[in-house]
Length: 61
Image (cartoon, rainbow, N blue to C red; front, side, top):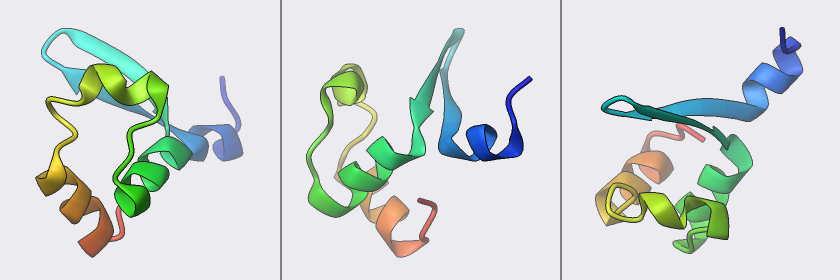
């Protein structure tokens, strides 16, 4: 079982039956730079400018 610190560093992205842990730091980088790290390229159809704005405006990351 992960510690609370480890649990806060990752989240689970679920799309239908597919789920994948991703680093919060990677989402933070995307929110502020607009660039998707290589490990998030698979999610580019979902992680669009609207999601980026949501992440930035509501400080989710």
